[in-house]
Figure 1 (cartoon, helix red, strand yellow):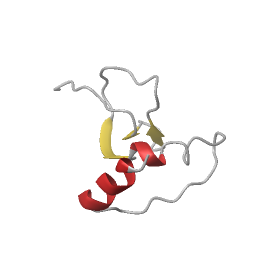
Figure 2 (cartoon, rainbow, N blue to C red; figure 1 turned 90 degrees about the horizontal axis):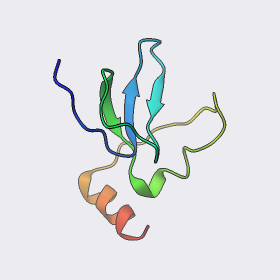
Figure 3 (tube, rainbow, N blue to C red; figure 1 turned 45 degrees about the vertical axis):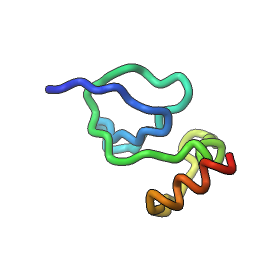
Length: 71
């Protein structure tokens, strides 16, 4: 297993098959699969209550950079 650093907003899938979005207290490494990343501009949107449903919308790199430029 290769360990890696995780960025704020990394989306991991734990052994319980529930996605975990790592926030500002993110650890430096772990063993879960990282499937995607939430942009910093959208982190406050997904910071709701436990078990709250959220929907993910794919963004191109250009769209993500544009959103973060205004954040």
